[in-house]
Image (tube, rainbow, N blue to C red; front, side):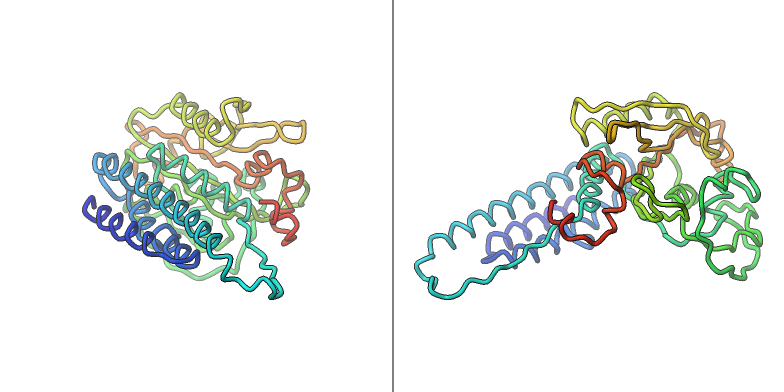
Length: 344
C-alpha cells in the first residue's frame, strides 16, 4: 500500500506540473481526488486494514491528499499569471462572453469537511443503501414490530416482496415475513448492523447518506435530509470517549467557541441515550441523537454484549449546515433556487 501511495504521488505531481490549463487540472483532481479517484479508493479501503497498518497508511494518504490539493492550487495561480502576461495577444475589440461559474452545494461542502474531520480522528467512511428492509431499519436495532417507538420514524413503505427464510451472517435465523418489507431508510443506523455482521471490533466508522421520513415540513423538518452516522466499538469504549469525540468534532467544525449541550433522551437502540443541542435562530435545536449501543443490538449481530461496548450517534447534516452557514429554513437546500446556491 505504501508503494502504491508513492506511485500515485509521483504520477500526480508530474501530471499537475505538465498541465497547461484549468480544464486539465480539473480532470486531474477528479482522477486522483474524485469520488472514484485513485487516492479516494485507498482512503476508503483503510477500513479493511488491520488497525496497526491503518495507523501507518492513513496519515500518508492524508498527507498526499493535501499535497495534491496544494499542487493544483499553486498551478492554478501560475496558470492565471501566465494568462495575465499574455493579454496583449487577446483581441480586446471582440465582444466578451459572460461565463457563469458553478457553485458547490452547501450540503456537499459541509459533508466533505465532516469527512476530513473524522478521517483525521482515524474513522473510516462507509456508505449504505437508501432502500432497506425493516429488519435492518427496525428489528435488529431493538425496535420490533408493533413497538410504539416505530411511530417516531414516519416511514415511506415500499411494495412488499416475497422472500424465503434464511440465516443471517452470524448463523442466527432472524429473517421473517416482515423482514421482507422494503422501505426508504428513516435513519443511517441500518448500516451499523450491516457493518457489524461482517466486521469484528475494534473499529470506528461514520456513515453519511440521505434519509427519508413521511412528516410535515417546516423551517427545521424535511421529508428527505442528510445524516452522518457514527459507530465506535471495542472492549473499553465508554461514554467519556463519546463526549471527547463529539467535543473534538464540533470544535473543529464550528471553532473553539462553539456552544452545545448533552441532554438525556430515549432511543431503543442505545442505553443510555443522549441528544446534542446547539443554538439556531435564538432557540435550541437538536442536531444529533446518540448513546451507548444497546446489548440487544450487539446480540443481533452475534457480539457478546458482556465483552463488547460501543457508542453510536447520528448527526443531522442539514441542521449542522443551517447553524454553520446561518440558513433560516431547511427547505432551501432542496429548493433548486440558484440565488441560494450562488452564495456558496
